[in-house]
Length: 149
Image: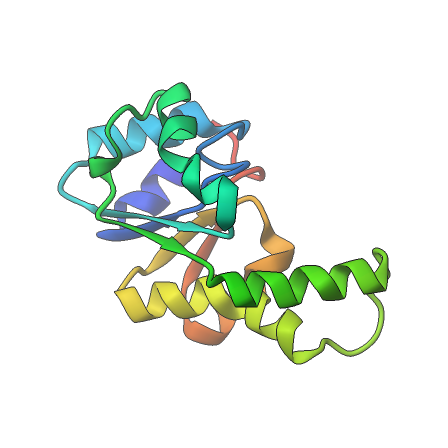
């Protein structure tokens, strides 16, 4: 069970969109955070620009009224997101072919930053864009949507 897996970790990275906000298991994840204040909880997000500016209000609307339950907010650098977004636009959804450097940087960013910050697990719904980095940097990855409570 997911709670048992999370209980093994003292430092947890949490995705925002699709995990803590509008995620099918969000209510359980939020309760786990509230029930485990001694663990390190950090937000690890692909949000940038306006979406990042709305982070606190979006969390509050979904039951996390005090962002201080998180030690840090780690947001992908805007240049990494922008280069990835431009490539996605150019590819028009075609995911075939060799990954280019901006795609690799984006897909490995969450794993990299978790390792850098001492987080041992990432809970995320976007496995496609997180699995590569988590594997590379030795971070456990829990699929927020595959979990059944």
